[in-house]
Amino acid sequence: MIIVNLDVMMAKRKISLGELSDRVGITPANLSILKTGKAKAIRFSTLDKLCKILDCQPADILEYEYSEDEMED
Image (cartoon, rainbow, N blue to C red; front, side, top):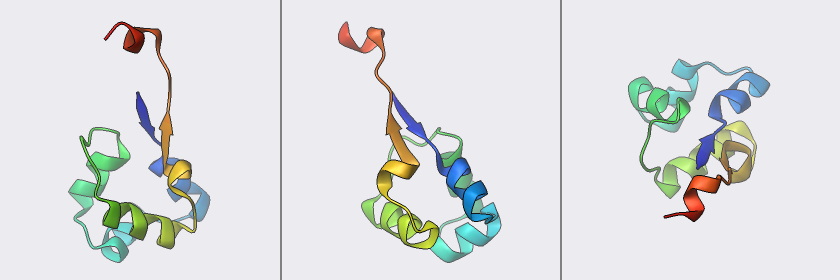
């Protein structure tokens, strides 16, 4: 399972959803979908912009969590 830690990075950098969406160039609604982990995909260009603005690595935003259920698939 992929966990999105965008809200954690936003809090660490003290940046609001509105400000980040303006700087990244995506709508607040789409950024909110990403932030809540409901997004099915993310463009590398968007991830690149997020990392530049938040001064972080992709692994600071996206995390993989292993679960026993996934081994059965």
